[in-house]
Image (tube, rainbow, N blue to C red; front, side):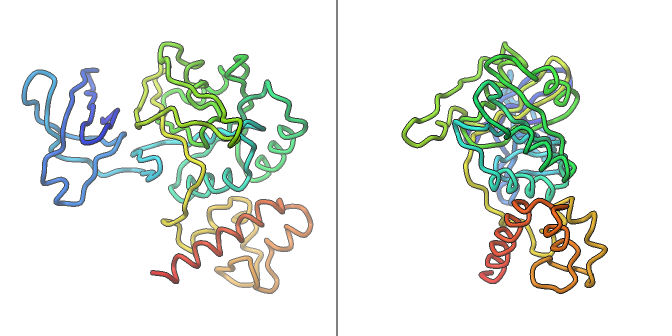
Length: 288
């Protein structure tokens, strides 16, 4: 498995635990194959610990941003402040996970900071949609054992904007990692990127977790218009009550989702973000 990628060099770990530094065979590029961290590969040893990638096995799952293959789950890390909590970004990341058929777990970090009722609100908002929420503080060590249990024996990727404490959480879970952490820019109120490459890190409990560059925006290029409603689990639960099959929950009459929003059964913020995303993916498809 490729566990690290920097430029055109790939660190490949064998089942026996040996690590080889490889470059990709030229024909892979000709075939349009770009190896990624998490890929299962075959390689030829040239000398010592150096080799050449020969083949890349078919992927079970793939995330383009960050580029990681064969992931089991996405842990979306957010914070109540420093940087400010963005529910729209959180929903974008959840849509990405659902579109890739990945399990998603929400982690509210920086529990040591003042956050009024954010924790209770998120539990209600996303619990209703079927998501699990963990509350942690990398600074104080709160919730770390619970998060570690979720990472054991799985390949996970931590996603979320820079500055929410992804690397700090991993340092708490596995202190020997000594990952770089950064401060929040007081001027911009967002984090500085401290992770410059993608790497799968081994945990003592048997899991692998991707330490990835942070990002603040996420496009929905790969999400098809007709698939977007399926990326909101709470919509799926009630969509069979809509008058029309394939209802897009926007302007159709007798839409069960819109009725659920009006009654408070479905969160208004989730529905509003859905409409934003729907307009976005519709515009993208028209431009093709």
